[in-house]
Length: 206
Image 1 (cartoon, rainbow, N blue to C red):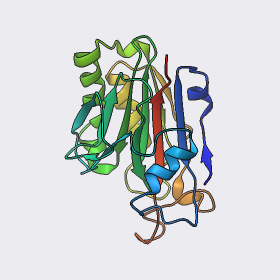
Image 2: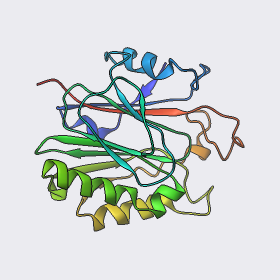
Image 3: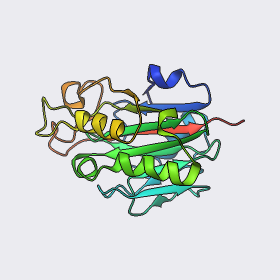
């Protein structure tokens, strides 16, 4: 199992993050998330993932049993060593890190979630629950489908929404999943017959 990490997030020493790459393994298997987490040094049963209904629901996670949180596409926490997990295969995984509190969020944002401004809802939740100042946040937009292969420019919309929410430290490499099928899965380019990438984000133990 192979992972990639991203330079702007590697500069934050109090988090662990990863993004799985294309694999011949069955990424839809029930135990894939746990095996990916174990490969990163986490417990295979203690993590939070979302049902991902393509809405703008946000869940605050304090503790978890590894079951998917229903009716949400974004997860936020200030609990240490509790990884958040999002699945995607063209939709963007948006990593959000409040560097001061600290607190983190992981957001699944496709067409519907982006139109519903799920990143704005996530930042607002972090403000309400953790006292997050958006100016203290770093955001990173994962590899996802680009306007070269999709009718909507999700990247530009996410950048705009994050800026409107007060997050100015926004990083977007603009890497298109459909352009790089050697490295990523793409639901659109592969007509739905494809696997999933998994984004992982956790605060490190104190």
